[in-house]
Length: 106
Ligand code: FES
Image (cartoon, rainbow, N blue to C red; front, side, top):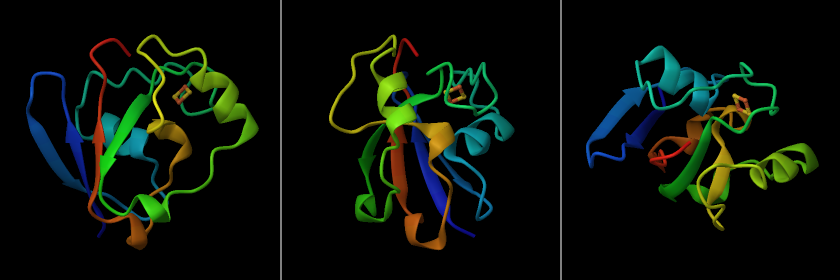
């Protein structure tokens, strides 16, 4: 199973094995990462699943859709070049080793 590491604002790192097809957001919520609020349930309508991709196989990430791009302009924490909505990134075998940081203000 692909592994994804979540970097939390307190400096801790948490690596989980996720199922292929699960979103990075779902992987966080199902493993108790409470900082990921995911208020819209994964519909790219709330931006409360904002994360920063910090490393790993970034070349395997799916492209940002127009909807995700628009919502990334609504994030509480600063939008950066490595910003993604974690609900819009589905886990693949190729993404194993991905590292994502959860912002302080999500
Ligand atoms: Fe709402 Fe991702 S969960 S935009």
